[in-house]
Image 1 (cartoon, one colour):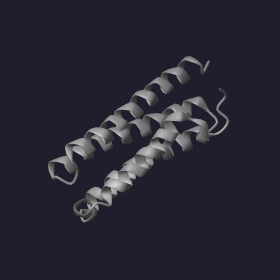
Image 2 (cartoon, helix red, strand yellow):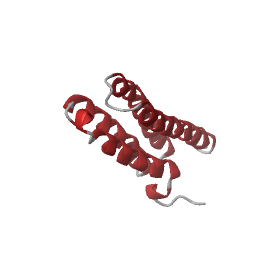
Image 3 (tube, one colour):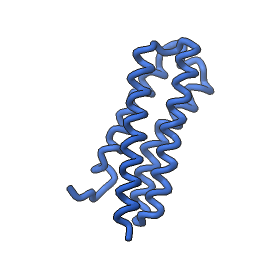
Image 4 (cartoon, one colour):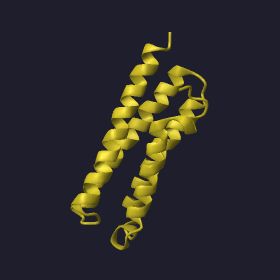
Length: 122
């Protein structure tokens, strides 16, 4: 399959789903009142999908890879922030596991995508 627009990229689609899940979970009563943590995890989630989109639109594999690395870093930030939310009992263990596993899946996909682009950028 040829990717013609960033919306065709599977990891971007999964990142979009993660954004929705993060926004849903941060709307919960206790989480929603912690403005700093709520804002930071929401920004990190949005950053994952936006960096994929921005990098794609650069029309240059080197730039795309750079933005994919930023996106991967933001997904790592989400994982770390989930521990804070869990420790503060804003989320349950099962909510933590679902979002954590989603973030790990996205990180793995981005890593494979970066490897693919590096191999095919000659």
